[in-house]
Structure formats: structure tokens, C-alpha cells
Picture 1 (cartoon, rainbow, N blue to C red):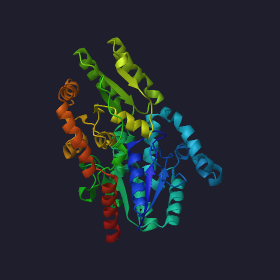
Picture 2: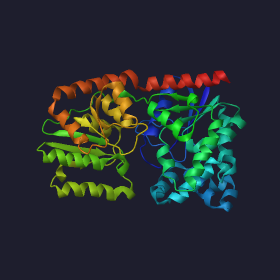
Picture 3: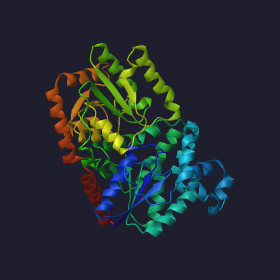
Picture 4: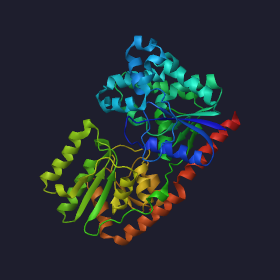
Length: 427
């Protein structure tokens, strides 16, 4: 059985979906499973070895230009192919934040229309490439590409699956009329998708309801990480209590909430600091400045350190050097790879009781949940772990063993392959 696994880059950012997709592909390839990882939109960016196979399909520049220019849609491929070069795409994505919500909405709807959209030539190119691969099954990365399912099934005569991994955040924020159009196109296109793979139980149930998907075709395959990489990081300092944060620096991820908790803890006389790392888009620099301004106003700016983006070794050092870890998102997170990585290192986590966090923490016993409506909930939970070293140690050990019992890359790969085989067998 050969699987063609499509994965979308995240415009130059480290991305939980990219990391999950690349890790799944790498593990299956390492098991000598026949899988081809094909990148879309932009190159994948991951802190592990990228196992995707060039070239890039539905390249971000070509997709954008085809949306806006009928002339460009008619140009021969040899004229436009250079725009899909990884170096060109990486450079162009530095300015992608300037794209308006209306432009994103129109382009999303166009791609969802498949052969009837402005990117038909990209679809034809993808079909041609997949015919050369000769897969027994094709996996789409998210529902924004659901419109590709029918033409892929028709051309290749193979099952088409789709990963569910948090696309509600993007689709919900589209402006009208594009949001309503996109939701209708997703519901219609879902009829041509043989099965869906949800990365968490929470999101599988949520997506089925939110998008009107057939719940009987939604399968749960847990996120898996290479847990052993996090086994031997540095110990946290004894001089002060360190709270770790590793995610994109933006309002949705909740760094400001963690900052307010830090202020409350310091005003209560507690010696603690926050060390944070993650991608910072130019458009989010004012948000980081607001975080620093709040700390400066309270005279505790020295209690916060922003490390920028970090590679894998830097990630492991940050997580392992923390007493607790928290990314207090303000939205309902579908994935939460960072939570699994922290727990794999034996670091207890403190997360809001919503999205995927309850099922991860309940499955591992590796942290505390707080009510996100309670303004003091995050600070009180961190304080509890500061005061009870024994509890912190028990949660950390439970986190370490729990991740290895239920959230490794091998478990993820075995369960995903079993789903693939079930559909190829039905065919």
C-alpha cells in the first residue's frame, strides 16, 4: 500500500500541524511503510529532519496570482514554475501578513471550488504528480482543501482522507460572505471524502458538529512525538521558580494571560520568572511590546525573558529548564503539541480547561487544569505547584510516563496506518 500524504507549510512558521505531519511521515518511512510526503503552499518548517519530497504544490505565490489575474492563469507552466522554488516562497512569506481578510476569504472559497476555482491549473498539476506516484490512498492536510477530494477520487480511483487539526480558527475568522460560502463548500465536499482523521477526540467531535461532517467517518489518531528526545535536558535553576512558554507570540496563545499571572505572583512576594520562546510575526510586535510594558509598569521586567524562535535543542533546553510549563490559549486548542513535549520532559503543565487540554492532561495525569473564566485561576494553580514540591514531582513523573504510554510517534504511526489499511481494504 502506498500513501500520498499532502502537508501544508505554514508560511515560514514552526507549526504544530507541520511538525505532527512530518513526524508521522518520518516514523512511517522509518518503519519501511510506503509513504510519500508532498508539501503544499510553502516549504514545511519543522525542528526535525524534513522528509517531504519536492516540488511544492499549490505554491502560495502562484495560488495568489492565479486568484487575481486571468492573464497569469493562462501563462505556460515554464514561465511560472520558478515561483514555487522554496527560497522564493520563504522570502515572499515574510510579507504574507499584509494580505487582507477579504483576499484570504475569496482565495479560500476559490480553492474549495476545485475545478471551478481560479486555481484549476494547480489542481491539474497535482493530479499529474499523483498519477506518477501511483498511490493507493491520498491524505489531505485540512478541510480548506476539501474541494480537491472529488477530482482526486475521479482521476486516481483511490480513497481520499482528510486530517482535522484546527481549521475552525481560520475559517471562523473569514469575513462574510466568504465564511458562509466556505462552510457550505466544506459540507458539500465532505461527501466525497472517504474518512477524516482527528488529532484529538475533542476536535473530532467539534469538527463533526461545527462543519456538519459525518461523525461515523471520523477516526481518532493521537498526536505522537519523539518523546525520548526530551529525556535528558537541563535541570531548572534552584535560585528562582521558572515558568516556561513555547508557542507563537500572539494574542490567541495567551502570553498576556501568563504575564498577568506572573505579575500577581510577584506581587504576592513569590520569586518566579517567565521564559518564553516562539515565532513573532511583524504584525504581533506591538503585542509583545504590550507584554513588556505591563511588566515595566510593575517594575518586574527582569522577570521576563523572550528568547525568540528556538531550534530543537533550544526548545528542549527551555522546556527542561522550567519548573512548570503553560501556554494559556484564549481559544479552544485543537492540538497542543507543546503540552505533550513539556510532559515528555517530566515538566508538569498548567492549562485552561478547554479544547484538547483536558483529554491530554486526564490521559497522562501530567498537570493541572484551571477555569479560564477565573482571572486568578492560572496564578493560583502555578502557586499551588510552587508550594508543593511533592505534587510537582508526582505530576512530572506521571506526565513523563503518560506521554510514553499514549502519545509517541510509534503509536501515532501504527494507528494511522491501520486507518489507511481499513480504507484500502474496503476499496
